[in-house]
Length: 164
Image (cartoon, rainbow, N blue to C red; front, side, top):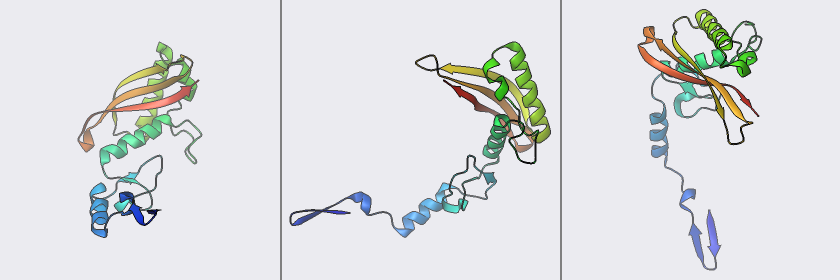
């Protein structure tokens, strides 16, 4: 875009863009390989992803699927009423031994049914309070392995509820 100041023009470097060669080089470097699955939440794709962004790494796809399984409550997945760990009703009780035990049981049952290849290792809840002490983020940290995919120990942090 040119800005006219009397008898001279000032151009912004942002208006130049990139050449076709630069664009193609950037597009092919972003996500090499064959897509494994969709990134959630859904996002518009770029380069060789197509219409929607895709995972190109099996470990990333498994982590995304496990996060979705843990955050989903019964009745939220059309056609699969019992899909999910159904943890929202336990969100404000996490930290008490009974609630933690029930959350671990629900996650274990859901993962055993829908992702039996995931070996769950540890469970930790967290409750992060912010400046005014009335707003908190309640969530879980789960460590797991996937031996069949040669994935060493991974950690997943899931937010169950943000309260205020």
